[in-house]
Structures are given as C-alpha cells and as structure tokens.
Image (cartoon, rainbow, N blue to C red):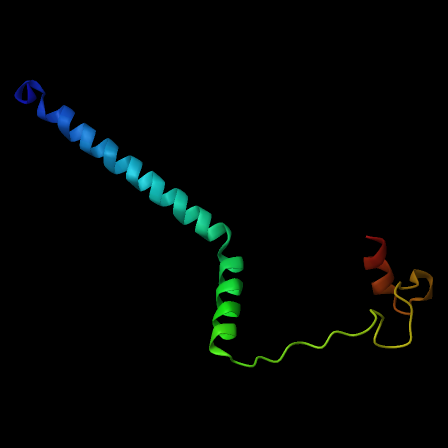
Length: 90
C-alpha cells in the first residue's frame, strides 16, 4: 500500500515532477526569447494600428548609390599616406 513506499522515493518523485515542470518552463522561455524581436515588432505594430496612431515611415531612396560622385571601390594604388597602404596590405 501507500505506507510501504519509503519517504525518500516519494520525495524523489515530487522532485522529478518539479524538474520536468521547470524544464518545460525553460523550453517555453527559450522559445519566446528566440523570437522576442519578432514578437515585439508585431505586437507594437498591431498596437499602433489598433489605436490608430499615425507613425511616420522612413522614405526609401529610388536607387542605392554613393552619396558623393565616386566609385564604390577604393583604388589601393592611389593612396597618399603610407600608413594606410601598410594597413591595406595587412
């Protein structure tokens, strides 16, 4: 019957149930932390939409290009300072 079971076995059983519950809580917490940025963006976007708050959006340029009239790549042969050339070759 129940009284035949030693007290240590009952305590170990309770500890194992507590451990499995803690393991499940840790797994849920890890899953939430993996997607926390996505959850934050979606929830805040949904909140501003439901409230009706007008949030200004960023204006995207029509094309991606350098801000000044220059090329994308740096010409390594046309460097005036020797220290920059040394760092470039390292």
